Amino acid sequence: MSLHAVPDPGPVAAIDCGTNSIRLLISDGGEDVAREMRIVRLGQGVDRTGRLDPEALERTRVALVDYAAAIRAAGARAVRMVATSATRDAENRGDFVEMVRGVLGVDPEVLSGDAEARLSYAGAVAGLSGIRWPLLVADIGGGSTELVLGDAGRVIAARSVDVGCVRLTERRLLSDPPAAAEIAAASEDIAAALALASTSVTLDGASTFVGLAGSVTTVVAHALRLSAYDAAAIHGASVPADDVYSACDDLLGMTRAARAELPYLHEGRVDVIGGGALVVAAVLRASGCAAMVASEHDILDGIAASIG
Image 1 (tube, rainbow, N blue to C red):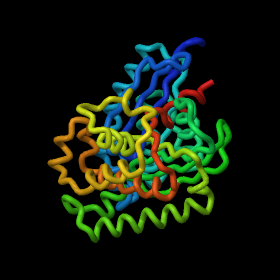
Image 2 (image 1 turned 90 degrees about the vertical axis):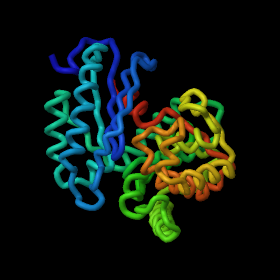
Image 3 (image 1 turned 135 degrees about the horizontal axis):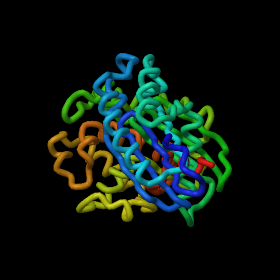
Image 4 (image 1 turned 45 degrees about the vertical axis):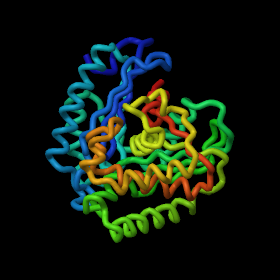
C-alpha cells in the first residue's frame, strides 16, 4: 500500500526538506500526532558546486526511511513533501527526486521561492494570536530567507532571497570565530539580498515582525537564557529588538566549542548559527519593529494545512 492510500478521514503527513534540516509533521484535525527534525545538511557544498553531495543525499535518505515508518504507523491518509533552497539550486536534483520516490512512494515538490514564502506565512499565521497587523514574516533557512508581508489571512507580497545560515557560513564565515572582514562580507551579502527583496516586499511596512525556523528559535532561546530548548517558552515570545541584537552578537562572536556548550543549541546548528544570527538581526533592523515574535509554527504547518 502506498503511503497516501489510507482511507479518509485520518491524519496527514507533511515533510519539509531544507538546506540544513528535514522535518516531519503528522497532524490529525490540526493536532500534532508527531513532529520530528533531523539535521542532514542536504545543502552541503551546493553553493560552491551546484550539486547535491552523495553523502548528504544518503543522510537524507536515512532520515526519510524513519519518517516513512512513522507515517505508515500513524496510518496517514495523505503525504506531501516539499523541498526548498538547496534542491532548487542543484543540477542533480533528479537524483534527489528518484531517492524520495523510492523511499516514500511519492515525488517531492521542489518549491519556487514564492511558493515557499506563502506556505511559511500560512503556517505562521495559523499558530499565532493577538498580534497587530500587518505582519512581516521572515523564514530564515539554511540556503534562503523567505519574506512575506501580509494582513490577516491575505498575503500582500512575498519574496525569497538566497541568504541563509549554511550558505553564508560556507561562503563567508570560515574562521572560528568569524573574523571582522568575514562578518563584513557576509553583512554585505545580506544587505544586497534585502535590497532585492525590498523591490517586492515593503520590509518596514509591518506592525509586527515574526521570525521562523531554527536560527530564530535559537536566538530567542539565547536571549531568554533558557536552561534547555523549550518550544512552549519560545513560541509566541516577543523579544525586544535590543535583546535580539545582543543575542545575535553573542552567538556570532562565540567559538564553535563555546556554542556547543549551550544547552538549547542543536549540535547540527553549532557551526552555522553565526550566519543565521546575522540574517536575523539584519531583517529585524530592516523591519524597524521594536520586537521580534518567535513562532514554532512555519512552512511545515502550512504544508499540512494545504493537504485536502
